[in-house]
Image (cartoon, rainbow, N blue to C red; front, side, top):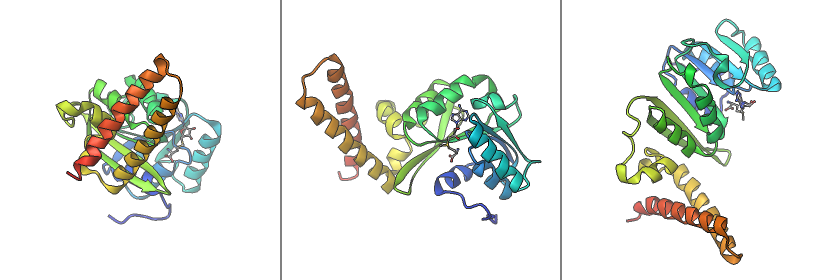
Length: 243
Ligand code: SAM
């Protein structure tokens, strides 16, 4: 398929767009300028989209962008919180990109009643992907694919989920590392993955050092334990590649 390049899309959002099955009806929640649905419409990926925005400024930006590109017939820009902007069965794919994982999980949790006809979730957390993996696991969604990429010195993850067998991608003994690192990403261990987790390791070790230099209390002991667990988990996965 020829990709129309009228709208230059970031690599991050292109990674999301590439997971949209052709002919889909999508809801892009937190759409800001509606770049993603506009790109998807211009490239023939979708037949219909709802671009949802909770804030007035981004809502206006989305409306302007859709009008400018003459896409009003295919993209409906709506103001509202999370999934409240869609009717039941109006779309079959939901994309949520560019937010923290905890906020994405909250949006999914609050909008559970709108997920009935949804076949695929394409989620792009900037941080905290673990909370999304936990939510998917607890709510009957199977992680089908994961991507990790670096753009402008930031590292982004893309999670693709469909209804299925939520435990399937996880190794029974390694659920905790799978949830933190991503079951597919930790197998692939590409350069972006290694860079992200090496950076996190350094950060955590510095915090542990700082904790060790101060008087301990119940909270710091707990925090130290948690950080040590994570260090061990991540080191095990990163060191696998050497052994
Ligand atoms: N999705 C775009 C992207 O990936 O480039 C925009 C990301 S921008 C950082 C996050 C957007 O989500 C903001 O425009 C914000 O107003 C919107 N947002 C945050 N919470 C939201 C919610 N509960 N419902 C709808 N939009 C929300």
